[in-house]
Length: 269
Image 1 (cartoon, helix red, strand yellow):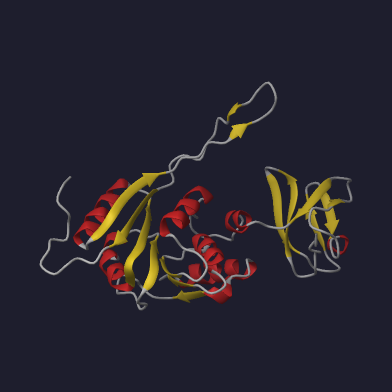
Image 2 (spheres, one colour; image 1 turned 120 degrees about the horizontal axis):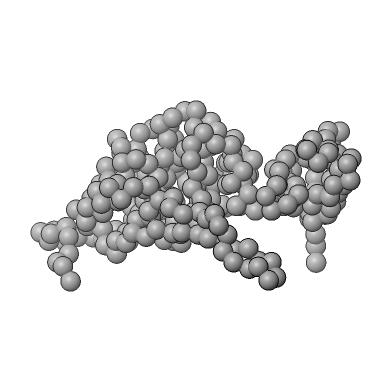
């Protein structure tokens, strides 16, 4: 079985403990300093991922290959990012995969964009709308570090005005007024295409669902995902006291082709 060697210029994850990890770029001749001492990057180059190294103070670090989760949770940020628990459901409900064409808004600092790009590569494309240039610049840096810039087009444009792309597979929204984008999404999506919206408040959800019904979307559902970690030590296994509770509501739906003359909404069951 082949193994991957660590090369200069690569981004690695230095693991000290579950609560202490560091995302660093390997640069020959330099060192990375922590409260547990420093480690030399020259000791990384040519080694296999999973190798352990010692700091000058004798502390053991493990060199790991970053996961998608690491790129997201350790991204540079100026805004609140989506948590992996929500991103996983957004990816599942949107039905994206390699080759998918996705419209996203707003980009923020690119955490969700990074995940979407990871799943649509190498042949797919993400068109990400953001009106704040400073956020867009940070998102570009985060995407570059994750090696995903080739499949993302960052657009400095207000999506409320409209969506340029047509026949896209899905529209993913993470912004304050998603209901205003629903008519544009309907025009941009392929028949049976998906829309997924993330909103922190239920008032936003209600207005979005109303807009989806008015624009002939079907299979509309809203969920909330809560996640609780576990302490798993023999004799004292129990849920953690702290948990990742409410972060937002996820609303998803599919585009239908409403026959002319029929009402936009279906009769009540």
